[in-house]
Structure formats: C-alpha cells, structure tokens
Image (cartoon, rainbow, N blue to C red; front, side):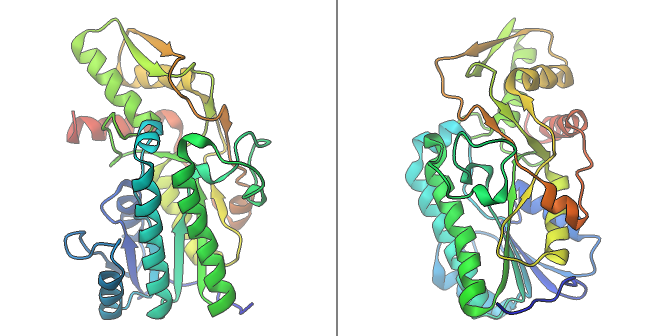
Length: 316
C-alpha cells in the first residue's frame, strides 16, 4: 500500500463538491469557505453525474485536485420502499462515474459518503466500522445500502490497485438547513417538522407518526457533518470507512415531542404502529474520528430550531 500525505492541505487546491446543491453539499461549501481553496461546482443541467462521458469530460477539463462525493439519490422509508430501482441505479451510476473519473484525471484525494443503513440490522450498538458486511441488511432500504457499500468498496479497490488516496466517511442520520421536507420522500426529522407545522397551522388536535415511536436513532446536524468531512479530508488516509455521528441517541417518540416543542405545537401525536419503522436501534461508534480530533458541536434542540427556521424561510 502506498503512503499518503497526512495532513493533506487544501490550501490553493481546486476542490469539487459533487452534489453541491443538496443539504450535505451546501454544508460542505459553507465549511470550505474558511479554507483557502478554489471551490468547483457544476449544475446538473450541465453535467449529469449518471452519464460517464459527461463526468469524465468535465473532470478532464476542470482538473479538480480534491473531491467530496456528496451527490446521491436519498429518501426515507417510503421513498426507499417504493422507488428501489432508482435508489440502486442512481447511486451506483453516480459513484462509479465520479470515482473512476477521479482516478483517470489524477485527483489527489477523494472522500465518498456512505450511509448509516450500510450496516447489518440487529447489530450490537453502537456499531463499529468493522461490522460492515457481517450480516443481512434492513430490507426497507437494502437497495440504497448496497449502492453505498459498493461506493465504499470502490474506494478501497482503487486504493489497492491504483494507489489512489480515496477515503470514505459513514455519517449517521442527518438533518438541518436545506433538508428535503416533502413527505413522500423525506427522512424522519424533516417529515416531523413539516407534519407538526401543518398541524399547528390547521389547529389539528393531533398528527400521525409512522411506527410505534420506540425505535432509537442518532441524528447529526449537517454543519457538524461538514466540519467532520473537512477534518477527515485533511487528517485521515486509510482503507477503513470512518463513522461520523453525534454520540447521542433518542427514540422517535422523544424526537416527536422535541419537534413539537420547537414548532410550538400544543397537540398530541398518534403513533400508527401498522406502518413500517425500520430497525429498532441505529447508533454508530465514533471513537475513531474522536481520536482524529473531531467532536460534534450542535445540540439536537439547537439543530432542530435551525432546521425549522430554514423551513419557515424557504418552504412553509
């Protein structure tokens, strides 16, 4: 295995954020604003990341030196269960094209983002990085998980065969400004914010949450993730993907109460236990990134308030 420079300096580098308009990509752009680097972005109408020729031509022309692969097709339980072909095809195509073109054009360093669903269901918690591929996946989002696992393994393979300094980060459930608040495709926090806000506007006495409220989840504020990703880009080089999380977990019933408090909704919540709710617990071990020197900074209450403020300004 070749040796790579750690720390890696972003100073003066051309840095491409693939997926710059999404929640993750926008947060990375905010974080890179304090780095002395040249930010590269490209709109979907100019380059479709699912088309290999377009990706390779654009990268050959612009020659990014560092790449954050934040582009992805994402969604919650409903979106995953009703659009499995889109979730596996879109994500495989995007990551395959970007990672391969990064090798072809001599990118110095690349960071690929995985997803919390890559880990097998019913693991001991918190989940360590070594748990990958040790058991069956959660069925409700297995197609997305398979695509993300393939991206992680591509980075490993290109390190092994070609000596590329390609790394992967494994974030937990994310939320914050720029999230997707459409109920048919959103994750739990933006879905709760949209539902509770609408219930407040309508004067409804209650609103519905899928599942029993018992599953426990970990949530990471998006700007904390962006800081972690820049930290990893500068300070980590290795085969193993690195978990990024908040270090705390909460059950969905407690989360629903916290969202109602932030929104100022006085009504009740009804849990529809007939609806799917995923695995009962998902919580990642973040001891490795803590040893690198990173810690999350934003409390769940503060993060929810910022997410709701963005929703009011941009969606509601």
